Structure formats: structure tokens, C-alpha cells
Length: 417
Image (cartoon, rainbow, N blue to C red; front, side):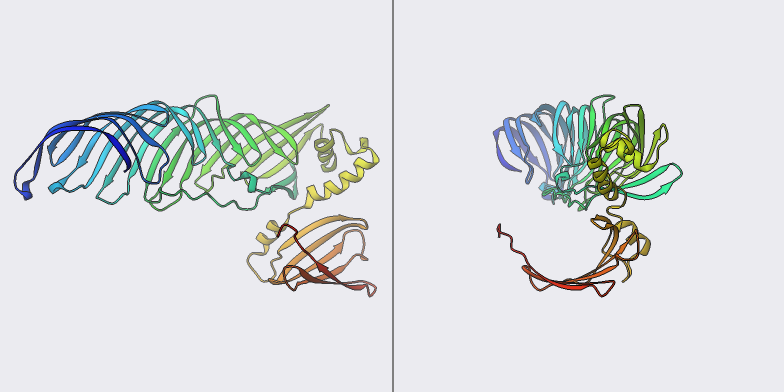
């Protein structure tokens, strides 16, 4: 413990030999405060009554302020042969305010047991928390997530879309590496929200926080929802029903099964999402039934493609290509596996001369090759090679059909350096 203060009084007697050491007596602690190492929350205004019993100190009753609430505790501190050998403390509190810890914040009742065997700091925490209001923030690192929309394939139910995110690095929690924990978290029937990765949903159910010693914090359990919204490409879809199942990913990345809907004029677009929240598969359908282009047009512009202006049609073509094909690299790489042929990038782009598919591969850390193939004819084939000499200078060479070739030298300088 650190920064200890308070008033203590006691009347203790030691009896027996060193081998049969015993404590008798008792005492009190008043106006006490202390802090566990590497933990920001202080125990304040503690009033404690204890007694000595054999080779233990029994905490008969302790009242203190923690996390903005008064709490109570009782338990035992083991002192065999006069040496500290661990403790078991039972704690309870009402209207406890939980700041954002492991992505969960809220207010409610808490009950649990904190125990430790031996001298070294390695506590076990077991208990339950019943929240009256709560928020689960999946996206503390959401600002670092670059989300994209990716159509993988056509199915009988409509276009399948994959929403991707580059991996977020979990925040390290200092001071908890030696802690083992099992906490059940019960959410209220209304007023608990999950936020992150474009999802904001009111949820019900219970989850559990598990942590092994030296391991990460894991969130487990299934939550149901019938209210909220899901946002992609600036389009807001209303959550109709669904479930989020936490499977212990770090950071939390639940498996979801959601049905979302957006009504635009006389068209109702339904999106069914499944898979991990960071990379779910999205299946579109509409009523009345429409093709893929019209569904995208309705979502992006509020009306079918045939009702768009000339500039909107051109924009739809560009955005539609990105919407349908951007970011297919993870799918292709997963099909090829980890082989020398696995590309580093696969994309379809809209250009002034039409759409092209582009496949890219790093042959060395400084040499990047791309091959472009036109989708509307055979005259757009092109092979490019870019060699980075240093961080400022690179050389690019292109070779295409009809003996088209060229070499460019690029100089880059970041004025922020």
C-alpha cells in the first residue's frame, strides 16, 4: 500500500513460543486512507474494527469510500508465525460509480471477494456487479481504426459486404499483470449501451470479465438489442434486432448477428450483419426488390440510379466501384493463404479510361510491383515497378501494350519533418 494515513489504536498480546505464536486482543483504525500500488483510485475515510484471533487478524467490519461510494468489507489477514501470508476480504457496495475500466463504465451494486495466498502481490478477484446504467465502449481506440466497406460476393439474398478495420493495439494496463479476475456484470433492462466500430446499440443481458495472471482482460457473454443504429459510409441504419456475443477478443470485438433497416421514400433497405464487429459480413435486400446499383444509390443518395443527375451518376460510378470492390485484399489473401503468390493489395479502381483491377506485391521492402488489367477491353494492361531509393526519392517505371513505357522520378518531402 502507498500514501497511508489515519489513526490506529490497539491492545494486543503475544502468547506462546515462536512455533506456537498467537495473537490476542483487538483495535480500531479511523480517518484512514491508502492506495494500492499502480492503481489510481484511493480508499478514503476508512473506519475499521479488528480483533486478533490465533495467527490471524480478523476484520470484523470496515467502512470506506471508493469509486464515489461507501462500501463495507470484512475478512481475515493470515499471519502464521508472525509473517504475512495472504488475506481474504469480502467487499460490498451500493450505487458504486465505475469509471471506464476495460471499456466498461456505469453505476450499480457490487459484491465480491479479494484474496491472496502468500506474501507476493498476486490477488484473485471474484464477484458480481449489477449495474443500473452502463456503457460498454468498444472503440476507445476507434479513432485509430480505418473502416472500409467491402463487397465479397453475390448471394441469393443480395450483395455481401465485408467491413474491415486495421488492427488496434490494446492499451496496456499497468499494475494488473499479477491480478486474476472473474467478474459477472449484469446489465439493466434499459439504459445500457454498446458503442464502437460504427455501432451504437442499447443492450440487455450479462457479460463476464475474465483475466488470468499475466494475461489480458477478456469480455465474455451474449447481449441482445432491439434499439440503436449502425453507421457505414456516412449512412445510418436503424437496428431492429440482434445479438452481440463477446468471445474474449482483446480489445473487445464481439461476434454479432444484427438486422438493420433504413426506409428511404417508398423503399425499405434491410441489412443483415454477421461476423466479428470489426469485420462483419453485410447482406443487403430491399422492398420492393432492387438490384445492387439501385440499393447503393438509394443508400447514398436517397433514390434509384435512374433518378440521379449526371454528376451524381458519375459520382455513383466512382463510389460504386469503391463500394463494391475496395479492399478485397484480405479475402484474396485468405483464399491463397500464406504463400509467395499472396498479393499485398488487390483493388478495382475507377479511372478516366474506365475501371481496372490492380494487384500489388512487395518483392522487397523497397521494390513494389503492380499489375493493372482493364475490365472493359484489352488495351489497359500495364505493369508498374516502384523502387524507393530512400525516404525522399523513388523511381517508377511503367510498361504497357503497344510498346508504351516510361520512367518517372519522384521526390517527396514532408514539411512537418
